[in-house]
Image 1 (cartoon, helix red, strand yellow):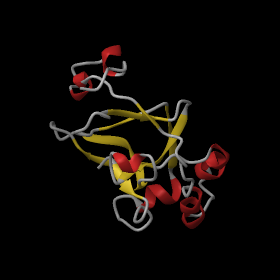
Image 2: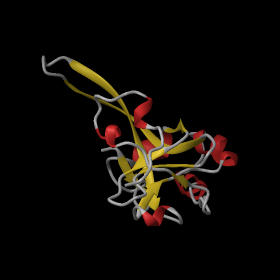
Image 3: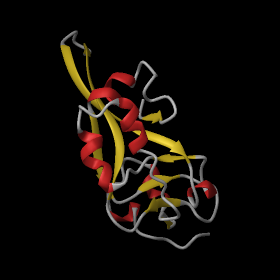
Amino acid sequence: MFNARIETVDTTNAFKDAFASTRCLIPADGFFEWANSPVDGPATRGTSFCLALGRSRSRGFGPTTRRLDVTSCTIITGSATEPMTKLHNRQPIIPDQAAYDDWLDPATPPTKAKELLSHNLDGELQFRPVSRAVNSVKNQGAECVEPVNPL
């Protein structure tokens, strides 16, 4: 599972332990949102930011019945705000930089951590269409993020 809803991240069995004690941040300068319109492409803020995440470790068995330790991260999403609502009804939570230390502190209780994620983007996102080359993991070059003219 790669997305957790802010509304239930602290109560859903799959996420609540990680949300309570092993929160992390992933640095980013954009994210992709698919749309069937002339505004296909990533949403960015124009500057670097971090996505709010929960991190967890789990144990399981691999194909050869060897024990495996797996560390995973989950992006926390919330209701979309403008201008994201033009593309989707959800968006990644991008916490205010002033909240980073408290967010990462395992001593911060889950109720306070959830409050830290109330930062609204207030129209800070910028959109630009990119090539559909980004749709395939085989493509890893600049063609995936270079702006293109909409159709």
